[in-house]
Image 1 (cartoon, helix red, strand yellow):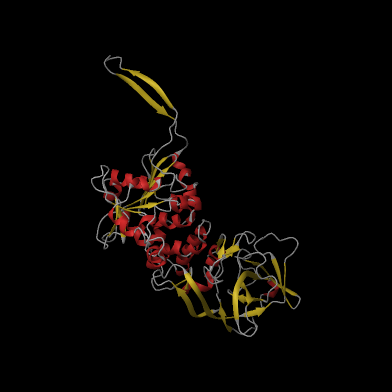
Image 2: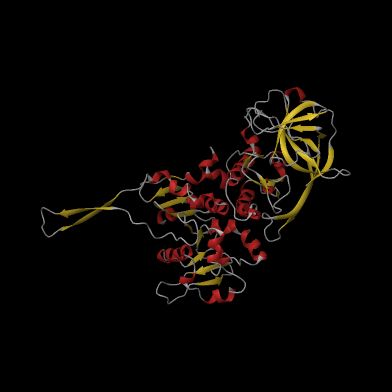
Length: 502
């Protein structure tokens, strides 16, 4: 940590570090200074953040008292008993004291959990909280707040007596233990419950420095170096962003020279695709749990763009082309999480196959975004949305029949045959199996599709829409499609129409 602070230019803060709205003053081990919550007025100071798993609903119920609530707010400002908080939180306090630092931020004790306004406001500060923390402690080994992370399980030891032949007064014992695995593999960080959770995704990416407490030992990550407690020297920072597939972490957190418009947004789609594989306890957290990374992306790559329920206005047409990995496993969110054209409206893993387009292929997007109406949270404009629609201009045509064949072709994502007046015009798939098969289905052209395009049939060029109102042009998104090679003129004689996209 001292080396990082002294030598790593990438890891130094770009501005004066200010405390979050609330932090814990960790006090002293001897009790002369109590552990307590404090309102900071955002004064400048170093602090440590904790990244951890809350656990199951049973775990949450067990430690329900160990949360900041409106009823206990004033009491926690006076003192907090270390014995009254869960082991994971208790270990974090002990670790910060050992590091001789004074302030600790923990979500459960620094956000008023029964205040929707405070929760929305503070969830919108995740970018600042984790990016500005001097260090993020990660309870990597703990699947819940009740497990703790400081205690190491005992390992079998081999005792070897030692005697100095040249000095009979010198003797003792060597203690040897076997390392459980090659710690350079990082499996005890990457293949654990903590690394499957939705909120921890941005916590890991936003933090400048992370210290992981895993079941196999300590692991260090910063923007310059990865290191475990047994490997010397460390290696260039890579592990937390190996899924970027060729991009470096610097490409996400900072602008690079000659970054093309398309390349910048492809990075966003990589981020969201990876995030979509994570688990959330509350489905309504889908946008809030990514809002910190959305703020970072806007600051670095899209400062003049508008964030629209998980997509970006300047790349909206391509953003609409998200595909579910497996429509049989995807489900509609039970509560409203976003408009149908937003990936946040579906629970399941998805990606944007258009980001795999060969560099020699040129995207020709059609359609126009005319107006945006999104009901956003005032406290976190990049977080949850309560409603919304867009007004679009595009070429749309009604389908007369959608048929799911008994056997699918080689590309399982396109599971349905699409017909217009008894002629097969394309192939498509519903984002969620069965969602719209008996409805009034239309096709919206997103890209001009040409014969033998080099990126087909790997990704869609059109969307499947469901008409919501017989008397007015109101649609929602239910799937995606490609045209048959002999029907590439399907939209040629179709005039663009204005419609509402819910």
